[in-house]
Image 1 (cartoon, protein in one colour):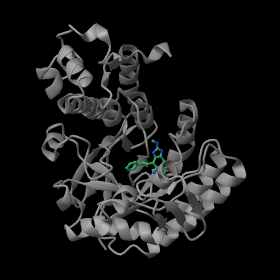
Image 2 (image 1 turned 60 degrees about the vertical axis):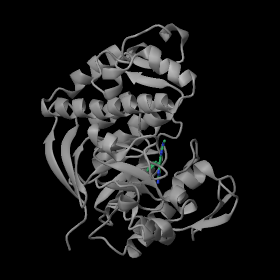
Image 3 (image 1 turned 90 degrees about the vertical axis):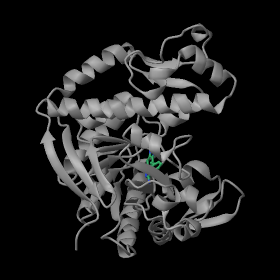
Image 4 (image 1 turned 45 degrees about the vertical axis):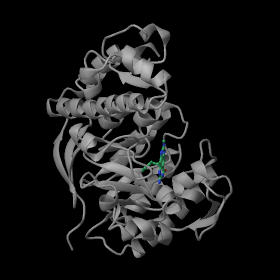
Length: 375
Ligand SMILES: CNc1nc2cc3c(=O)[nH]c(N)nc3c(CCc3ccccc3)c2[nH]1
């Protein structure tokens, strides 16, 4: 049976553990390491598919939880699936909903069967299980589906994390059992284990013994210190198959994308670029810029002098500050274009640095100008 998704290794950076690769999917190829913009409610907020293609977004993410509660996965299915519904013909990855239930709905109860919770929209009592998560993602028609898992809170004690990862493994097994179209949709498992190296090893061993087409590292970017996240990566990526994609969920900031690539991660997602754009915060090569600041009132230069994006080529800081202060939607579109372009360009630079065996040098020069070496 032909797998829906395959990983093609291209090269390993001689200077770091980073690797160049290609993830082949039914809707196209993803050059990795890659940043994946998040489109939670079937849209990357304020962006059109054409604009996303212009900045060369290779894949976008969406959410089982959000589309389940609104408009309902059956409507998306009737539309012919998520690609048709949102007019996006490149790859789509959907999360399984477990994480969102925990971060969004107030009342929820976990049992072996699944999770009962209240909709954060209207309080309806709802239920998601491995089987339901697979049914929803099947209806959405995403190229990559995530197994239904529990992302333990941080901090969480050893016993809780151990019991949780064991259940996540049993849930992954149930997802495999109820996977109806493996030749069209790839199911990735999610490695848990909290901040405990031995539990990360246990979770990785249990899941890699079940042979999934790709693996994610979950349970991170949940408030832990960055050094702890990097430590868990160093303990976990060596246990993941070298010929399968490695996806670090919920990461991240520019520094984390570089550090994660160095530690062998291929795929990243983060809501930051779109989320901070809405209050006018911009990522630039000199660090974050808060455009509402009065000092930009008569600054007629671009957001970032080194940036080639549509926003930086055509508009000034003064104009964008005016739009954001006036709560004009066009202002949010301009900061979103810039922030997404910034991270997508950063990953192009990372891939080039890996090709030329100089990713550690790239990291040092990036941190120097990004001002990260001050904290
Ligand atoms: C911000 N930090 C963050 N840590 C995460 C951990 C997990 C985790 O352990 N399990 C699952 N299933 N998802 C996680 C997510 C959500 C990632 C996402 C968002 C939107 C669309 C598609 C995917 C996380 N996000």
